[in-house]
Length: 110
Image 1 (cartoon, rainbow, N blue to C red):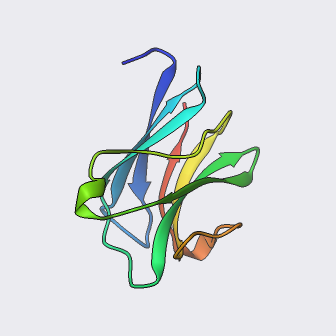
Image 2: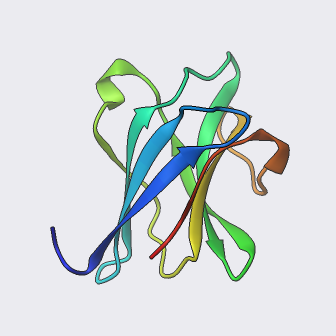
Image 3: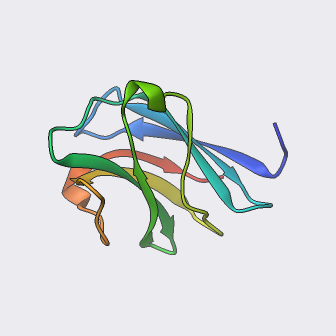
């Protein structure tokens, strides 16, 4: 509810219709939190990764877990600015660049 915090709704792409998540982005502290609402478990050896899109360039915001004890807000990497956020399915441990063919969520930042 802090006015410095933006809520960014992430909606499923054609790769994951019905998938949903929310990003809470605190501009004052540059903190990013992810709340996964509906996303299928990743296949073995794969992990979801959050990206911030900054001037058209994807910036790694961290990988996240889909385990039962990871429900609720997950703290991601700090982001100073972004026009959008996206989630891709990457090899476990993440990737330095996103596989855009494997994008499952996307949302425009306020």
